Image (tube, rainbow, N blue to C red; front, side):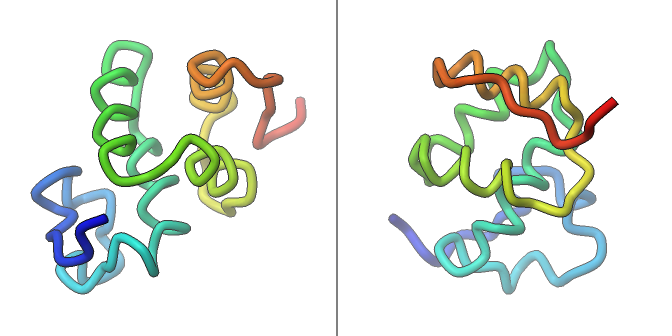
Length: 95
């Protein structure tokens, strides 16, 4: 895995508005990068967004960090990820 990548060249830098995105490390900061990369995804942009993540992270990393994040990832995004990876649907928020 390449470690020296400016994440703002891959994902919109506004997703990392509260930090210096140029200092993010793909390996060390995956718990930040994975959820934020999918934070603003929609049904229409999901495939493009998840494929960008998959260039750098495994299915198990993506699932793990989405399930354990404190970021406000919508249940719809969780459903899309579960469907893509053929795993049981999970939700970040209970209704």
